[in-house]
Image (cartoon, rainbow, N blue to C red; front, side, top):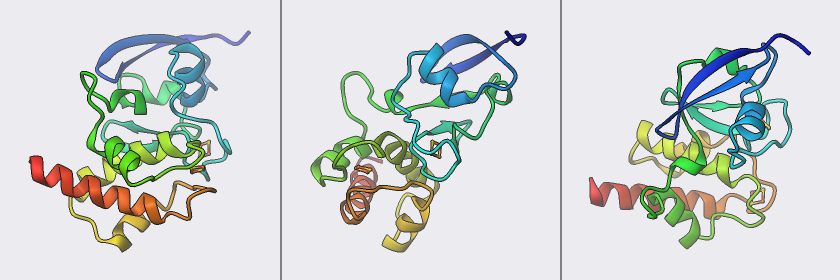
Length: 160
Ligand code: FES
Ligand code: FES
């Protein structure tokens, strides 16, 4: 077995540690060592975005980054969006606008939508489509995903 090292993260607001191999991908650490199975493994080649997580305020495909590169980082996964039993506005909007079918892409889509709306609180349809271009959905045709992001933007603006 390869030598491991201990990495520390602030994961969804909680300090956690994991022993990882130098070659270990963040998605594997999250799912297999930290019991965060919200981020999905789709392609493992940085195409599909199912594994997207927020790292220090940026959307990152966790199949493309080593856990050791994220040592000391603030991580947000889909599990961290809901607060105190309340769905985040993006989760509620995806639910109401039917922004999902099978749900496989959804954890990555939600976390990307969360960051997209932080980067641009009032995106046009074109900007939403561009903003989620790294997240593939094989079910929905994207129409309702775009509607859901728009709805979330309106809700967040109303409560700002
Ligand atoms: S599993 Fe990471 S981009 Fe597809
Ligand atoms: S809802 Fe099935 S892949 Fe997006």
